[in-house]
Length: 596
Image (cartoon, rainbow, N blue to C red; front, side):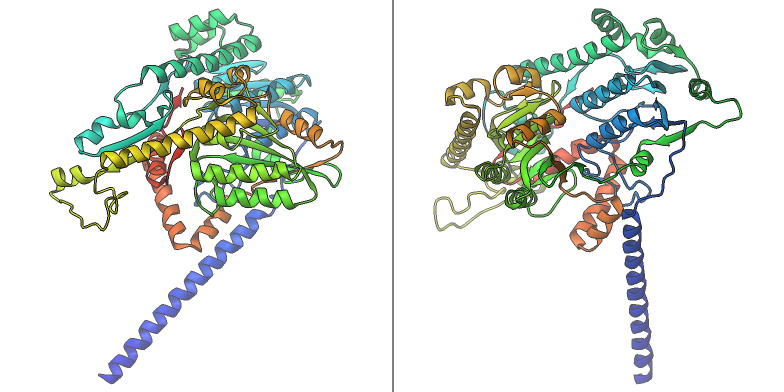
């Protein structure tokens, strides 16, 4: 027996050591991959090249600042709007780039981002270089981008989703009723529709009104832009959408949405002829990512020791210290803003916001740091992207100047709280009852297993209303209005960018470039460099970071599986997950509003 135990222990020790060695080597290999991924890929740009823009992935504001699969090791960069525009501008002046091949079949970006990229493509055309668009099928957003091209081409059996805009909201009230989940809902602002999916089974009249207003505003931009570049009257385009002419290739051609019906080989030959290549010469296409790697990736723009910091705040605003790609945690952004405030070379800050809001506490902490930056003598200019609403507007409202894009959704000045009570569902569905012993009247207050008393409900509502009043006060100070003036345009209502300017929620209509110019004027800078924050990582770098933390490792695996299984339903799950993890009073648009 002693001999047997000796061999058994030796065997176990050997197995443990082997596994440990494998894990060490595996981790070392991942670290090596991360190191190699961080090195620039050697990309050769040939003369007579065509820049290929597929634009078929989610497009963040800042490169890699998005939730990416940590197991996608072949795509080290997810280019953001800023870098896409930068590459188009470089290509305009690049003698090696003769034109752009646009294939935006499933374009995935918000309305303001789409307009920004499209405007860069319009500017590219002034160089005299060609833009040719081709797809087997164009989604509506994909066609919006393609319509800027000199030639819009379509597969002979393809089609175009050209039908107008609609907004869909998913309601959960009946499901919650069937499960006997009692949602205790508190909100301030008659247009604060964030709570509607949990207290109604259809859109309220107030929400229907505000949704129709901003949908019409977005649709007007869509129609007018296409009308200008396709030379088709706006009213005719509206009729084309109502008749669904684009759903067949012949209908798309007859209605002038496209110029020709061709196959891809014919498109390639067309581009070769435009460049002047003969039949034996190969068409050289370079992807947007490779072009980014071939050019000045990561370099600061501008000159001089003085700097303007561009801080990208995109995603939901949540409490926490850790950095989250595609999200805003107060710990991370307070740290960034505090560092910029203390950096003598940073002379101004541009806060680029693309956020539906989130935690009031986290928004307050970021708002405070923005205020301290101003008090330190550093101008703060806000540039709004696709959405800067609720908590997104909270952190913006006292900036020195606020810029929005025509397609920006902003406002939603209001707050809410959602608390599920599971006492009834546990009793009726599972047969579990709950009892309690208390030392005071409200000792059990806050438990999801016990319903609130009328007094406790009144206390929560009073807290909500006090937070709303504080929000109104902050906006009033920042926008130089009275409390009542702000209240009349607040009430949780959302506004499109142009209307937001008319009512005084923003100062100017314009993109990030104009905001940077404004910041330079306020800081009285003639020469300056631009630094971008936060620093972002490639998927492999994120994977190594997550593997060092057990909780992050589990989340990375589960997120990847859920995104794969749920597909288009994943955003709905993510919204419910964010609500589940929400702490305290919220200033956000929590439901998944799908505009298509």
